[in-house]
Image (cartoon, rainbow, N blue to C red; front, top):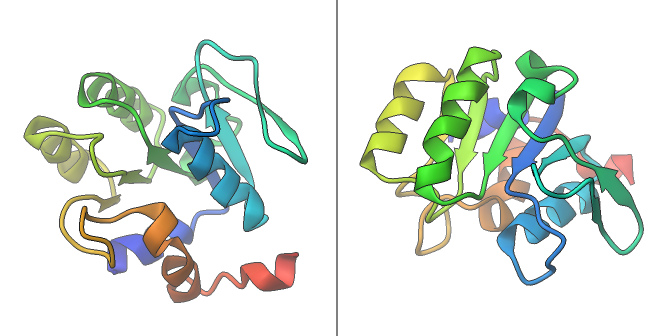
Length: 153
């Protein structure tokens, strides 16, 4: 839970793999951050914006284009082959914490993450059967970090 708390202690968030397809987890994760009134930037190299029902979010193509990467925790919802180079770039720009959603990493990706970031949320744990997931464990993480998202509504 320490990594979750550290992840949610960042003042900014980003979702790598954000999608305009409401059936995909990249859309659901971005919507989760939006619903909790958290400052979030979607990463998607092929879409200029992600449209949620009440707001469009302009995207950036990569971690390098984030406005304040050293203050941004990164949620990842990309396939492992995409995740490793993404994390390498994220590390190079100083992103402090990453949350690797279930299915986004293999052993090599997890090892890289755990040796290059101050906080990594990945693998076994959380309340769901598939491991740590923002959609399942995020609200508890916000509470642990002292983020009162209800007061932000």
